[in-house]
Image (cartoon, rainbow, N blue to C red; front, side, top):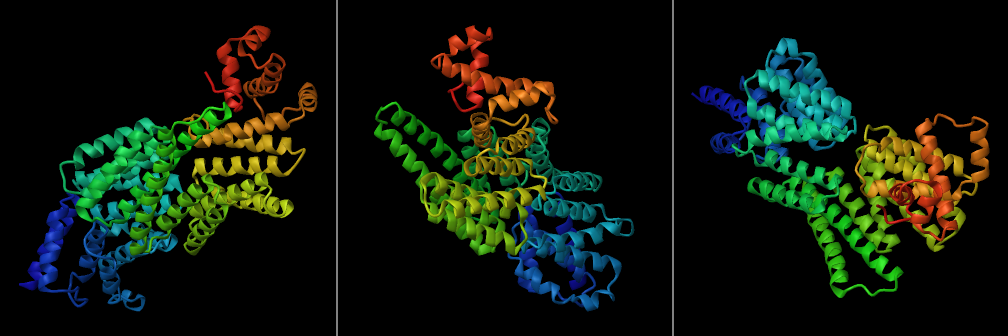
Amino acid sequence: MIAATRAGLLAGLREDLGLRRIGSGQAQLDDYWSAVGQIDPADTDAASLLCYVAQWVDAGWRDVDLVQHGLRSFPPGRRAQLRLVDYVHVLMAEGMVCVHEELVQKALMNFGLVLSLKAEIADPQLIALAHFWSSRCHRKAGEYDAALSHASEGVRHASEANMKPMAAAMRVAESWLLFQKGRTKDALRLLSEADAVLRETDDFITRGNIQSSYGRMYRREGRYDLALRHFSHAIDEYSKRDPEHRNLARSLANMGYVERLIALQLRKRIDADAAQRRKSSPELRHEYEGMRNQALTHLDRATGIYRLHSNHRGAGTVCVNRGHLHLDSGDLHRAHEEARQAYTLGEEKQDLILMARARLLECMVENNKLEEGIEDPAWVAHLALESAREAVDLSKRTENRRLQARALIWQGLTICNTSSGSGDAAREICDQAGALLKNEVQDHIWEDLQTLKSHVVRGGNLDATLHGWSQGVVGERTFQQLTEDFADLIIPKIWDHEGRKVARVAKRLSISPKKVRRVLARLGLHGGV
């Protein structure tokens, strides 16, 4: 009778997982656990049950320590005696625990073994899950091509198993990876399709992931109000399942990040008023301080949740975001401490993305010290250059193009700030970063690129550059790039000569004022069109 109950439970768990009937699956597990209280390794279906308990823990049922306890019944020495199907199920459960512990490479080994046996397993739902988990691991490591391939395969196998809601949940991950690769229209289409399927389920975690994805996409486009609205919707969805879910903390961290960007926009308005000797309204200053405080509050709450889950990536991301807030306010010591803590958290798990972001923050701190004349300039310059170099090296070991571009931009800015006569090196770095950000929206990273371009143009030797071009020394630059470089070199000079009057420059060169303003804006010399 118990065996029949267990077999029925396992079939029910598989079906509920595939159809994303989360409440039903959790109720079945609660009933079974209240009656039995454990997984008996002597049971015929013990390994299979452990595998699906692991999947349900990931979906929000109880804690991962329950799976860890179950794995103790299947130590490595005993696994050679298991049936193939049981061995595969143990590998899946162990892989899920490794993901939870942020042991990405070990998890990938487990899922790789499962996928190598897919012909013998002949279980499309299990194969779909192995692909999905592999995709999560590759994505965390910044390996987006492999992540996208596994996500697509996961969707295919889930569809073959007639598990349309499971396939939709996997499409959410596929959508984000397409967005990371610049395929925004495809990403939004998949996200909308997944939303249409999953809004009819009680899979609140994946529904929250959909809202979070929308939020991050709108954030990238600079539509910050919409981004905050979707992150708030994501938090509402997550809270329906677990008010302290780790994904809820991620949305809080994302909200803090967006609120910091809004605060920076407000500060620019305040600085512009000061530059024109106008006094900013008290409401504007109050809004600026309120946005910063709100960001810190959200980051603090995220920290508390991540601490419960011992999540290094999340905790480190909060440190980086909080560090940028301290940097914005001029508290270089606290910004540096946050960067060091983030790097330590990343190093413990060999999280290349987190380590690169931490080094980037350190680089920015050291550049601020140079500008303010704090500490020994030679030593600060050395630290800034080393932090920039390491950020570039770490970012290049991932497929995160925006991270690579940002690291290059700050390496270029640091070279400009620390080394005279380094125009060629900075220009080459600027070109590399520009290529990575091609077709990207004009967000804060793009603005940093324009600052670097401005430094390169101002610091360059015009005579030497023109002489080199006249000798055919153009490197790998296209004619279009040379045309843009020439405009960047000449238009600012004529603009200065003509009393900084756009109309005069346009008349002098027989070009449109819009073209003049566009070039000056690109170099950070004018407000734009």
